[in-house]
Image 1 (tube, helix red, strand yellow):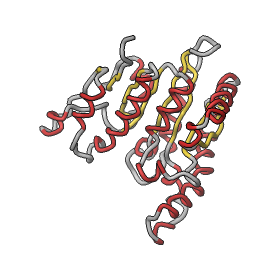
Image 2: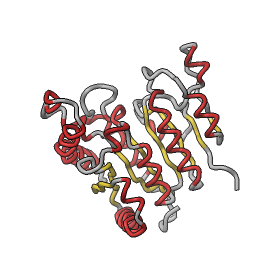
Image 3: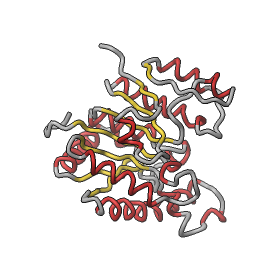
Image 4: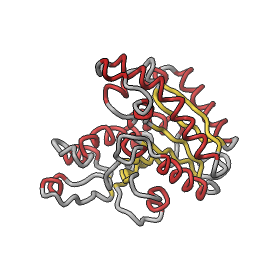
Length: 260
């Protein structure tokens, strides 16, 4: 809980959510997120970790015809990041919300001075009613491009800021049991603190339903758990996914901290 008495929520939004599982960034999805935050801003402060820079760039250029190398993807990220921030800025402003950009790399978290600067900067932004939009600095860092998402970055940031909740928005209703995946029935694991048990559930799970990326989300939850933070994995493709999750209207997985 921050100095204002409001709980601090870090929302991680993957490219599959921002594109609504299409090939283009969805302004409607960004507006949906803004609308929900505007509804909740009197009770919660929000920090967002958002992928999507490369997805935005693909709408403007076709550099990948030159090969899908790391260098090309870094160039795409450089083109797409300003466009992504513009989409957030314009659509959030419609709901009276102000945004700011923070580009980080994993190396920043390894240096105590950098960690302190990150924490102080983000706290000042939040205290002044700005919503930080965080992404990895893909122009100089390759981890997200190599591994495909910002899950670890969101967990490291959540732990650094000591947020009250890490909310990871993906394209499934949380983590499904392996047995239900094998039977094409998709039963959500509702609540657990057993990280190793979750890792066993997602081993060799099919990726067509998004569960191929669950391993990194569980790794993120492990980082958050060690910092005493709960992680909720929710379906961000649904409209109102934040408010509906808070009101327990939709299936999702809660990964709880270990009891002290």
